[in-house]
Amino acid sequence: MKLALFGANGMAGSRIVSEALMRGHDVTAIVRDASRFSISGDRLTVVVGNVLDADTVAEIVRGHDAVISAAGPGAATANNPILAKDIVTAAYSLIDGLSRADVNRLVVVGGAGSLEVSPGVQLVDTPDFPEPYRAASLAHREALAVYKTADLDWTFISPAAEFEAGERTGKFRLGSDMLLVDEQGRSRISAEDFAIALLDEVEQPQFIRRRMTVAY
Image (cartoon, rainbow, N blue to C red; front, side, top):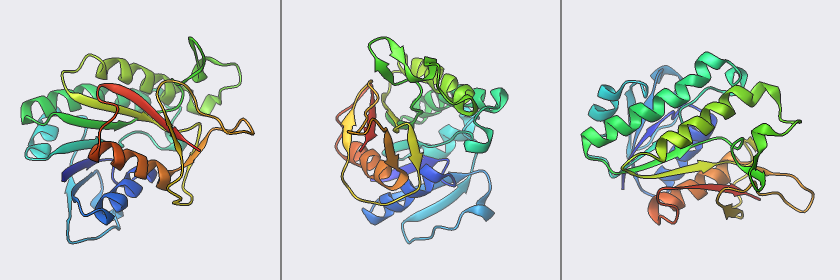
């Protein structure tokens, strides 16, 4: 497939690029700073672009089979309300840009905060939710509501509560709107295994116009 990926420099985005290239896909990696991008490959094209600009999105993604967005504030800036709001702006920009470019498939890396820990109760609304991640989590929740209005074949994929670089095992569970936890009550996934689950969904969709989650 020919894939366009926004946020290719980030923890999740870089793993998704590597996984996609390993599977033989053609990848257009869209970054804000090409000097920070270190992945190389015969099937890789690196483009400087802004996910917040619908005109740029439309121009870059035209001709691709699917678009993946891993764009968003990093852990160090996740609680900055201004930067977090870019998550919502990106949702509108992607929907507009893809529609104009006649690209119908969109897969978005979301947050874990809007996953439910019990019926009707989301993780971000629980008393012990980490404050440094609150602004970004609320923005991801708002962005999910925006994607639900889109006339695109979108999938919003939420990682587990603990999401960091680690091992590529290929062993994990999939869910929809409920937070997945293991036998010890932990919710976790490596960025490497998250990338596997995301590319599986791109290649063989199971969650069209739905949210999905992945955890051990």
